[in-house]
Image (cartoon, rainbow, N blue to C red; front, top):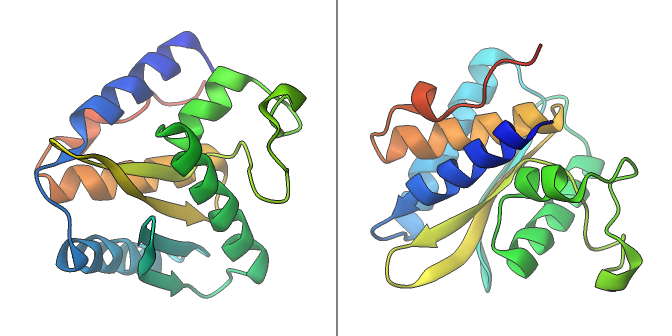
Length: 165
C-alpha cells in the first residue's frame, strides 16, 4: 500500500467515467463480472446500484451472507465519499478497517475495504457504485476495475495496479 497505489487509483477513477449509465449498462457489466467469477471460481457477491435502487445482484458459489453485508457497507462508503473504497483504504491507512471516530460513521454501516467503485457519469457526477466482495480487497478492487475498463473499451492492463511485491 503505497503512494503510487493511491495515485494509480486516482487515475482509475479519472479514467473510468461513463458517458451514460442505465439498467442495460448495469446488466452488461454485472453479467460480465458473473461470467468471469464462474470461469475463475471466484466466491464473490456482485452488486450494482444507483443510490435509489438495486440494478444487478449475483451471489456466486462459495460466497456468504457476510459478503452481502460487506458490499452494503462498501456501497455506503462510496456514497459518502464518492471515491473507490480501495482508495479510502489506502488514504485512511486504518489496520482495523474502521474510520476514525471524528467521521462519526457507524462501523455497522461503513467499512474501509476495497471492492466498491463509483459509477461516475460525465456531466452528472457519482450516481451509484459497482461492488464485489469475497476476495482479498485489492483483488476485489481489481476485478471491478477490469470489468469497467473492458466495458468502456479502455486498456485494463494499463490501468491496473502494479503487481504486489
